[in-house]
Length: 125
Image 1 (cartoon, helix red, strand yellow):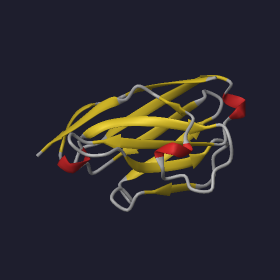
Image 2: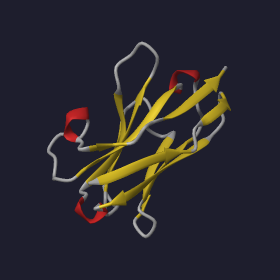
Image 3: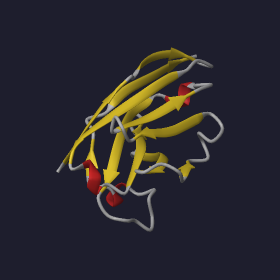
């Protein structure tokens, strides 16, 4: 089993920045990929970014490319999401997720075995 705990959410102004963290514990050696998703009020949860657990390959939703950066510190078992040039439409609960087996499609919620509890990000205009 793997446990994920997010932190770093809060309130930011449009154009501002926030950095989210997600600490993994448990059988982290078994993980292949980690991701960030978000869910805005009244909307479905959507993919934001992914990274291989050992680092390297990353991918992003079109809506955040060039503004968000996903990274991982394997020594700390911590996943990060650095969010710059925030927009009001980025307001959502952000979740980290991880998968314990290789995945072909990594943008779907069903691909992930473990989820954090979520952290609220609110961007004011």
